[in-house]
Length: 188
Ligand code: SF4
Ligand code: SF4
Image 1 (cartoon, rainbow, N blue to C red):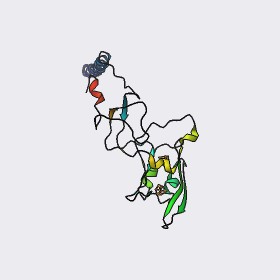
Image 2: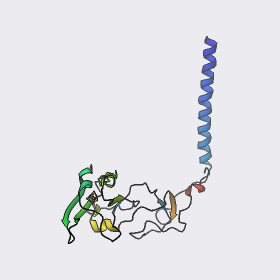
Image 3: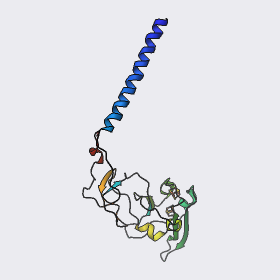
Image 4: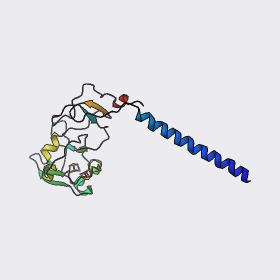
C-alpha cells in the first residue's frame, strides 16, 4: 500500500515539475524575445473591437433628424444617474430632447442606456480618448454627442496614428484593418 502511495506521489511530483518547467520555458522565451512598445499616441493607436463600450454618441435618422424621442428611459435605467433629458415638442409635434447631457465622469460605461433605448438613438462607440483636467468638460451635451464618432466596422488592431486626431475620426489608418501588432512578438 505504502509503495503504491509512494509511486503515486512521485507521479504527482513529476507532473508539477513538468508544469513548472513549461512555465519557466515560456518566461525565458519572452526574456530573450524582441521587446515591443506601442508608440502611442504619436505613431500607433489601439483600435478597439466594435463591441468595446467607449464614448456615447447620438444617432440621426435617414432624414438627418435626431433619433432620440426624449422618452427618458436611458436616464431612468442609468445606475449612475448621469443622464439628463429635458424634452420639448418640435413643430411637427415630435418629442425631442431640448437638453440631453451625459456626465461621462460618473458613467461606468455599462451600456444599459444603449440596451434600453427603444429608438436605437444612443450607443457607445469606440472613442476612448476624452480625459480632461476639468470634470465640467466631461459633461457632454446633445450637439456634441451627435458629432461623436460611431462604431467602426473593424477593430481589434493597432493602426497607424498621429498625435492630434480629428474629433470625428478615431485614427489615421493606412491599412483598413490595421496591422497585426502581435506579429512583432516572438509568439504569434
Ligand atoms: S453607460 Fe451605463 S452608466 Fe453610462 S450613461 Fe449609460 S447607463 Fe449610465
Ligand atoms: S436616447 Fe433613447 S432611451 Fe434615451 S431619451 Fe432618447 S429615445 Fe429615450
